Length: 228
Ligand SMILES: CC(C)(COP(=O)(O)OP(=O)(O)OC[C@H]1O[C@@H](n2cnc3c(N)ncnc32)[C@H](O)[C@@H]1OP(=O)(O)O)[C@@H](O)C(=O)NCCC(=O)NCCS
View 1: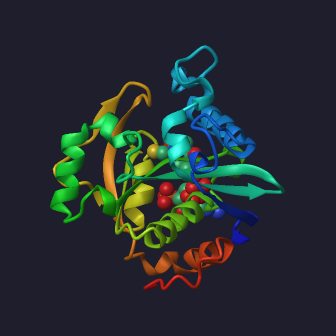
View 2: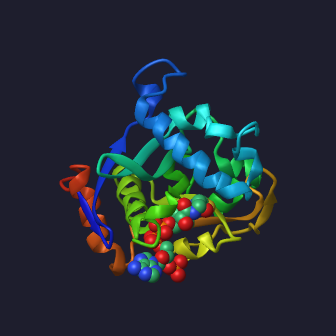
């Protein structure tokens, strides 16, 4: 349980669905999270491809979803926010950034940061239901990124952040910066200029520490030797 200005938010960390069964296994929580993502990304027509009849309707991003760790934020048992974390070193599918900027550019950015794929995670699909926005739920979800990154010994977290609604600012405010040697690129499906960014998972800002402690408790990871 984590507190925000909304009240009590229950946080869950779900392991990659493909570690539990066949590749196409889709548990109920994933179906619920995808519905939320699809609605949020459709955004009343802002990204038409996520709407009914669109290429990404219901956001069935199977390969990435089954290989990723997922965090869901629940209020009264309902998923109101989510994000997912993909280990870039897994043999699995390519990340969003591989698709958006290309593998060479992603690898180059990581190299400049002094890491390789096995030391990196990608955070993606950070979504909060419209009625639950501006209560810090996105911040709570971003706090979990530091926790999961450190738990999985991945010092670097990358993310392709939207810019139209200034989503990149959320990451910048918690210590994130542009991935070296990259620039924002326009992505058709997301209908936005997407900014490749990174965060250092072992170096959270002080302003995030209380939320991070809440996430460690929620995930029962408090005894995992965190440096913060
Ligand atoms: C981007 C998104 C995840 C943010 O979710 P959120 O829960 O509203 O975010 P937070 O409440 O943690 O913070 C959002 C802002 O509200 C502010 N805020 C928080 N509580 C507030 C309050 N009580 N009153 C006023 N502002 C408040 C925060 O300071 C922050 O402001 P800032 O952007 O100027 O820093 C959400 O808008 C969303 O799902 N958007 C669509 C999908 C998307 O673009 N996802 C990002 C992937 S690139």
